[in-house]
Image (cartoon, rainbow, N blue to C red):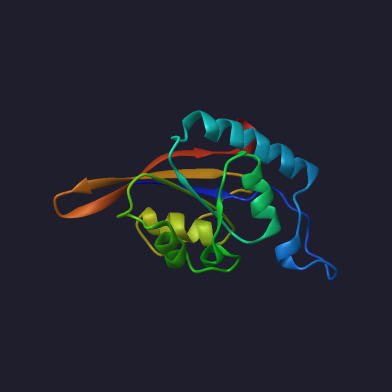
Length: 152
């Protein structure tokens, strides 16, 4: 299985007038999403499952791919990291799953995959790509790449 964690690109700050779920990407965020989407489209297999948080900023980030996706409430802001991994079907599902979500959930999920109850910082718009490696007695996560939107 390949599991790709993509944090939404830069979004408006929360204020009293807009709910957290309705925050939009900034112009910079739109550019970040497009840059990373171009990179992802070079490497994503044709058959993949894309799960997106119900937040507007994650949907806008995923829209940059120009591909169909599913809204997944289990990866909404504040979701527990283990819930993200369960929604993705890690590690038993076959194929590739792309999750478009939020901090700190994505950083916590990456920390769990890398071996512990640690929280890592996932930059806005960044991608962390993991693969599962099956061994006779367990499944090991392999970090294939981390992509920063400013470096693609």
